[in-house]
Amino acid sequence: MRRVREQLETPSGCHRFLYVSRTMPSLREYILVAQDAPRIEQWIRQPDDNWLRSETSGRDANIQLASVDCVLPLAEVYDKIEWPAAGRAQITS
Image (cartoon, rainbow, N blue to C red; front, side, top):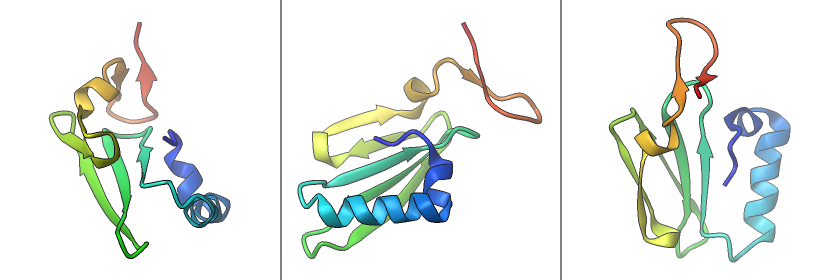
């Protein structure tokens, strides 16, 4: 799993995803965990080798990880993260 969403949003990150998706045929699912809000972008490889993109957001949301048959609550992913009214996320102890 990639944890840095910004890497996909830059040309080099986009190229990285394209490279990985083309050179690793066994890769079935790719997720990006946002650092600025409770949001996960999910890419699932379809039987025709195209990728289906979806986005899940909100601390109360859950994401179904098809490749490992698991439901992941975003509240668990972001358990120790607090977002101030303005600015970057902060990790709490």
